[in-house]
Image (tube, rainbow, N blue to C red; front, side, top):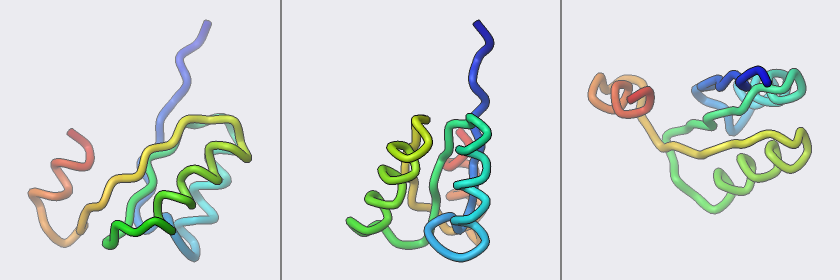
Length: 75
């Protein structure tokens, strides 16, 4: 069995980032969903991607302009 790839998509709760998250999930990638906020809607978006594409998702709040938060996102 081949391991499923995981993609980190920043800004993935709206716009182009959301479209990319869906596209990668449609190809079978698990997805780390990210944005600046940490709302119920953000978590619902991650859950919807997982349910629709039958992949695993996780939501992680992180500000990509802050190096420590970038490291935490990928670490």
